[in-house]
Amino acid sequence: MRGKFITVEGGEGAGKSTNLEFIRRLLESEGYQVVFTREPGGTTLGEDIRELLLGHKHTGMADDTELLLIFSARAEHLARKIMPALEFGKWVLCDRFTDASYAYQGGGRRIDLERIRQLENWVQGGLKPDLTLLLDLPVDVGLTRAGARSEPDRFESEGMVFFDKVRNSYLKIAAAEPERVKVVNAAASLEEVQRRIEMVLKAFFRAQSESQ
Ligand code: TMP
Image 1 (cartoon, rainbow, N blue to C red):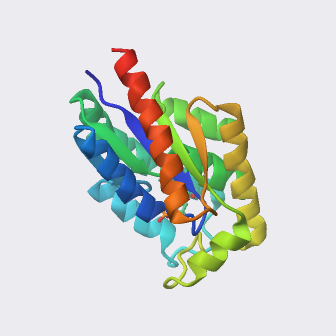
Image 2 (image 1 turned 135 degrees about the horizontal axis):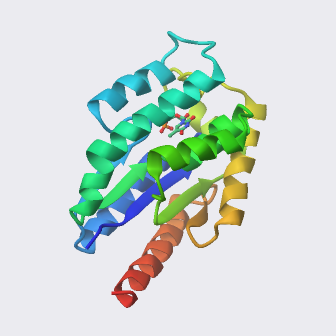
């Protein structure tokens, strides 16, 4: 049976890394074989593209270049890693995916959403995540948390206005697709956040076993 595709999204400082690790352990404890990966990246070529996107060598990159590089990395990721794993029956847990393109390039950079949709159709065919967890928190709280970390990358160097647009875009996607996208209040305590994540996943596992 084909595996499931789970993605995790969120703004800066939302606690993605800690919670991805928590989710990976939950999936493994249910007995699923998990491929843990990220975007942009996930393959050798994709990680090289990630460096181009996140590094400061190409500050001032045209918005369309950014979007196309992201979808190039995604095409490689799908062909070489995600699709083979899903077809093999493994579950894929991915740190960000196409919702981030709608939020950052669509919302943040104001690229026409229709163009993103065209690339999505081209590169993904009908593939979409089966479940997406959106770790949501107010931008100022996230930026304060993230600020304590190392040198900001090309995206992290954007300002409040950009991240507000990113957050609103994510919330719009969640409102439009409530079955797939589950919002988790990431401003709560870690214990609370993980309790909510566990609830969402347990419901997802139940739905899987009922549909078998
Ligand atoms: P992160 O996964 O470590 O947070 O860094 C990846 C950065 O790339 C993050 O700032 C969001 C950005 N990004 C996009 O702008 N569009 C995309 O489609 C993806 C996957 C990521």
